[in-house]
Image 1 (cartoon, rainbow, N blue to C red):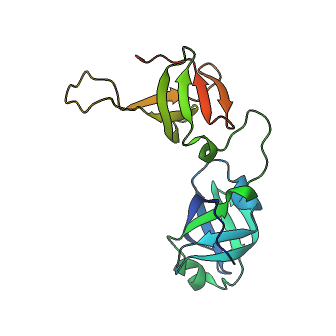
Image 2: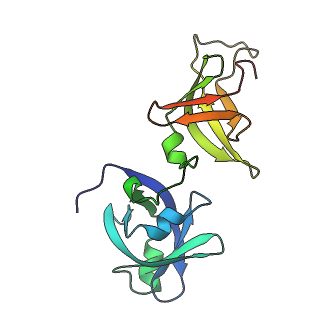
Amino acid sequence: MKVPEDLVLVGYISGAYGLNGWVRVRPYSADADALLTAKTWWLDKPEFHDVEMMQSKIHTGDVVAKLMGVAGRDAAEALKGATVQIPRSHFPALSDNEFYWVDLIGLEVENLQGEHLGQVSDMMDNGAHPILRVAVPQAAETTDPKAAPQELLIPFVEQFVITVDRTAKKITVDWGLDY
């Protein structure tokens, strides 16, 4: 099978589950719907290959799954540490104003005054809500500890995030340059 161009890293195999060849997957997102619905997974162990996901379910925060060709606990344990990727095109559809984090990374961020704040480099979750990690462009290298930050952490909540325009690749926030 040809390797899809839109693969997204969604988790890793943390070990075997039971005796019948099921694997335990630690998802990189609290919402594991993509792992549960995608019928083909791409693993990087023993070499990069696709595998059919036959059955899956949530179990204590992880996803446990039966993969085609994985028969028995030893075969499942041999996959421990393998990363799991699935095509972005196989993610479940979202409703309006819902976003997959992978779709936000790389978007430009500007504030209500039209000032460019930077580009989303990553997302993280602090337990209360997601946070945009925005890489701030630096005009010049400096050793001054009071210089502008190299990264902004902006809560991804309605109070601060005004619009997300994936077509224009831009997020507008109510956030100042000096916050």
